[in-house]
Structures are given as C-alpha cells and as structure tokens.
Length: 219
Image (cartoon, rainbow, N blue to C red; front, top):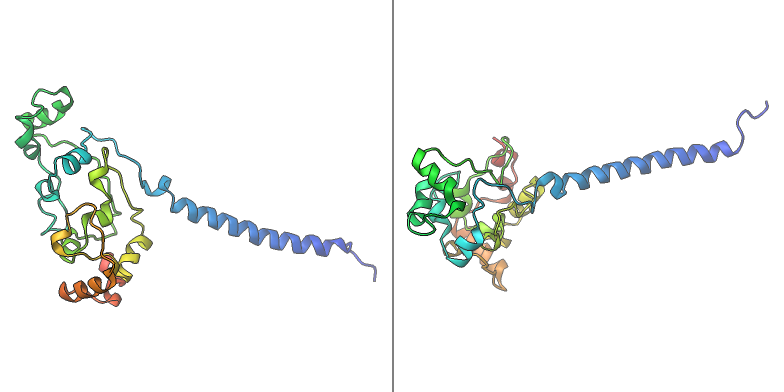
C-alpha cells in the first residue's frame, strides 16, 4: 500500500506536540509570574490618601509608638484606624493653620471620618487577627515592613498565601521578645533559632499542623 503521508510528517507531528506542551508551560509560567508581580499584589505601590500621612516623619523622626494610633492592635483582630481626634491632639497646636491639614480639621469640625484607603487589604475569605500575632511575638515590621522609613505608606509584602505559610511553617525564624514587637529595625540575634524555639514554648505557639490548617486562616 502506498504511503499516504510524507516521511517529514513524523517530524512535524513531534514538533507540534512538543511545541504545544512547551507553549502551555510558558503560558503557565507567565500566569504564575503575573500573579506574584506587584502589578497584581500591589506590593511596593504607595496608595493615594485624603492626607498623605508620613510614617517616616511620625514614627521614624518623632518616635510615635504604633499603639498611639492603632490602639486595638494588642487586643483585637483589627489594628484600628485612629479617629481624627487623635490627629488633633497634636495638630490643634502644631501646624494648626496648615492648608495641607485642612481635610483633618474639616473632619474634626464636621465629625465626619476621613476615608482612608486600606494599604494592606486581605480578601474577605482570609481571617487575620492582629492581636494573636502581636501576643505571639510577631513584630509589626515582619508584615508591614519598615514603616518608619515610608514617607508614603505602601504594602511591603505580597500577602499571598505562600508568603504567610513561610512564617506559619517556620515561626521560630520570625518570633521576637514581646517587648521588641513594636521596635522598628530590630535585628534577630545570631542564635535566633534557639531564641525562636524558646519563644514558641513560652508564648504557646501552636504546632505546625494547626498553623498550616486551612481553617486557621479560612473560616
């Protein structure tokens, strides 16, 4: 029986099959890369705010403690957004006539809250409790970065699940003494592995099975 297809068809068939697999692999890699990129996660992108509050000035230069503004961070899931009165504690005396701070003064006069844009905004299907992390020895800068060096606030970490799991799988690498939780620029000691294991026991950090359980973060 005469050969229907030319011998070169075998090569074209193999090339098409392997080429398609390679093309799909490239597409998957591009999709994964896009998902992890700052374009998607909004990492390192400063947010526009009604007043461009500078953490570098208030935290870094003046030395205001995180808890002065975020009053519920040690006892509630939500760290808390300061009311306008907190701003006016200082700005009724300092820069009291600055046009830049007129939105703050108007908010105080009208008792209408400023509409801040959330910087670290997790999806609704993710449960995150600030108080648990703070009371287990996780520093603010572990998640939020060096806010004392941010003239404009931006998201320092990707906040993707794999980023969270890195800490949940190895909490001893990130734990610090509770008195250092709000310290910016804290450097772990050389013996961090030993310190971390001790703090895990002292602060009653749950085991890896619980920390990696889906229900821990998705409720």
